[in-house]
Length: 339
Image (cartoon, rainbow, N blue to C red; front, side):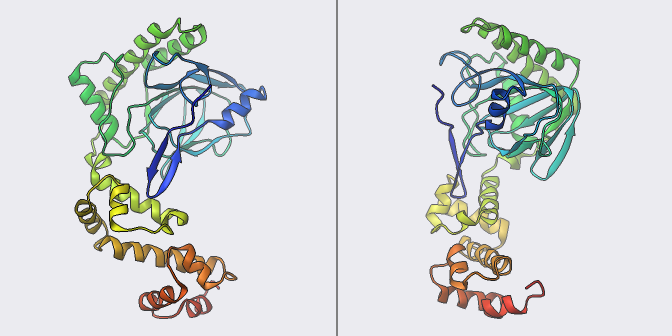
């Protein structure tokens, strides 16, 4: 039986890794040819617990016609590599939208939000690999599986680029295409682990080829992508984007703990990012969220808006709102051009 998806906590919100339910439904409906080996909660034929540790999913899909589904925003606990052999697909990471074409390779870091489809998926043959490196926050060290045979120097170089390069789509060469095709054949041929050794060899080859691709293209390095400062930046971004998280009863120790940092270090990074103390910036985020909610929900009670944004009482909300915006919440709503 498949295990439950692993969880990841950021900004007070709990994320589960992707369960690929749209893919499962398409396979069950007979719309999609799908072949994969899997650990944990992912859809595919089961790998034995000791086989290819860290590989959560490896295989491919073959969509012979346009599909009425797509993979909406989701996260995976590991590095995800996908390779498009035929067709074209919409692929989005953060605010960057891509149209991937044959021989394009996509790479997403652990827990990096991304989606496939616009929102639907067209005819395509897509290979995929999800490899867990035991990361639950951006600044944690990666732990590669024991079957990886790269030299320590090559492993360190590969890790450094994968962690610190923000380019999500690469045009790969014929060698990477052939490697993915061989991986697909090995997945198809596997019976009770008969292809595990061959797959381990192919996956090592794939990672060597990816490293050589990085070297050839001169992959840029951005150390901030795995820094403690980046962790704090993601924490605040999550609170700004998720009202339910913003409303949680945050304290300075709780915010710091959520980022896996000490109070002093968290406060220092917050100050550099916002020029405010954490308490001041939290209050600013809540006020900005409340001002939007007042206009978006003109019939909502002001106290209800206050509580939804994390203020303890309507009276306290009215006081700090007036201090910030120069007028009461009701006057702000009444005098807004959009109201």
